[in-house]
Image (cartoon, rainbow, N blue to C red):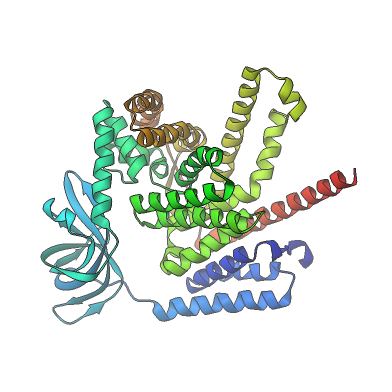
Length: 483
């Protein structure tokens, strides 16, 4: 019985180590069930290594754990590292990490996140860390600091001010060429990753589509894919990949280092490097390495909901993609190269378009099924409109992203106007159509232990299917070589 749930982890050592680190993080939260993944490895030495690494990770979280400070209208002095500048209701707010803070009473706290209002004149002076004094209080965001004194401190931090000015230029470019206010806000959110319009945010939240506006692996992957097409035609493979990697890093610099953006940037960078360093890259191994780097850079990001959603969705895509191909082949059977050569151009384009949309719809459906246990546990209500929109809207956004990239590359007003005509109908269906009326279903209560069991079973099922598909591909390869 036990040998049936063992897998060949030799192809995915990075994914195995990533699973061990996550098991340690969950063990710190008193969820030991993921430790059973150690026994899916056929070698006893690797089982022991998995358990030791998980226990060591849990021990590190235990030793570094600090209680969340209770700060209610206290005067503090804090050393802050600026992360981003956010504009909301025509006011500017600085979001910063605070590695050290001391109150007037002498109480010291470390590693908290704060938000503080700033003037428009100050927006150009946050490329350096700061020592700030003022009143702090708890808020829905975390901690709100009303700063009274500022003092620049070296060394230099992330170039927050430069990024803020680039975002303003991008928004100005869109505002100058787009007439509709809603489309302006929509394009600005897709380009910069920040949702400034409260109406847009509220409506996308009600319909369960807010995640489509936040820059994630979905946006990163499609933009990199769009840029890779002309580069692969103009350059050799090695130089096109290096250029693509440089563009990926430039795009990350433009967006900023939030958790979701950092994860997408790391995953794409690792995958491009894996193609450069090996002839046959393994996406699951690249995913595991990206997860390891994410945890090493920001250990407590492993406890964020977005971390679980992004990595689980990507894992489901990579392991279940052969299943998606089978589903699509039943509706639209594959055509051989000889048949495709004989087909008329319009018939050929229709065939490719149909398979593309069928694959996208099947992919969206499987992702929603994979993420359903997390959605039920963390969200008290699920939007039925959101379930429908999540099948169709994400793939409909791909041409929008393509036209936005081309518009900025060629500084074309015509492409922006075409994009506005294309994007406005389905945007209005979310903002003002039937989806604008909330159709919510209350989710049943799922305990954390039941959630961990459901996720473990889901991951085991995905790994087993991946193993079956891999064995079938090897059998087909052997048959091809023999014939």
